[in-house]
Length: 429
Image 1: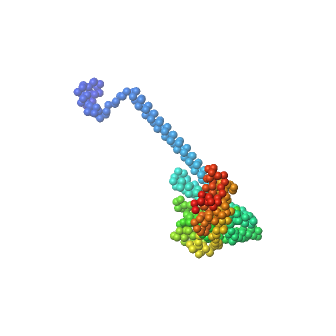
Image 2: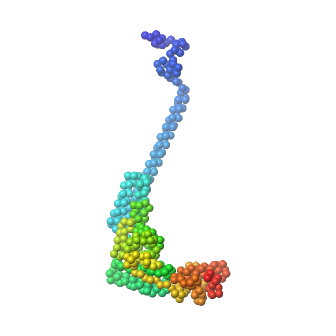
Image 3: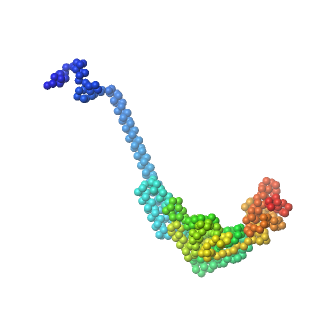
């Protein structure tokens, strides 16, 4: 046995020299083992308690986050399911063609698949939901089976036309003949008979009453009136819409006007057909050929809706300043009605009996609060020379009414009478 081992096992204490010889410089023994440290027991307990507290806080925080995530997930799933369910209820409650209803249900089913696959919070689902809901709202907003009841009283029609317009007897007779044709069709063929309505086109100079006469046609028939302006139109998609597969796609003006009217038989005014841009004229005229042809518009298809809609119940009315910019094919589908210019005598009657009473009412004046002498009208109707329409006359009468209203409100007078002596106070001639 080694003397060193026997010495270490004999239980005798080592001398300082022997202890130094048996340790290394890092206080380890010659066998390489570090001596066991014996810190204070209170310090050990304190450190352990701190570690346990930290672990408990971590576990509690994790559980709270998981609970919130679970609650959010359940809530969002419920909201998402509720949104899809509401879309389905809209489709089921709407009166739609059977095959179109199936198309909408297929889109809703596809939306549900996207939600279950990509997740309710994914951008794919959100974009698809917005596109689908927007498309469904436009489709169910169309008046597939809603039709207003036509007023077919000829005496009432003549009264309305005479009230709104002076003269224009050929136009009035044409509208009355059209109404008589509708009445006869209903009497002989039943209320569901589709009348092939003529497409009236009023052509005349500015201010001759083309647009207002189209409004009177709608009032006579008790139909909704919608207007589509063609002035400056530069793209046929304004009429026919854009495919819904493009971002921010929407239907064309035809569908929008039908949705706004709420009936499938409104009077739709195609205003200023001759003022479309030169670059888009061919495309726009191509759409009008289909739109105005009774044999084709029974299945008009908007690119956004992508399903045929029957426009044969609509009464189209058009206006233009001249026909030179309208294609021959479109002119062939129009019944041109020339709007005559007004002479001085006619403008006097229009200003005195039509424009003045309407303007006084709009200004808030009573009939007895403003009067215009007969001898003044000749100077009012032609202040700046010849004018084919009545817009200039309308502006001058409006100025007179406003001036009279200001004088009455300020207490300068209780009633006004315009004469040749004080005309310059009301109209800057």
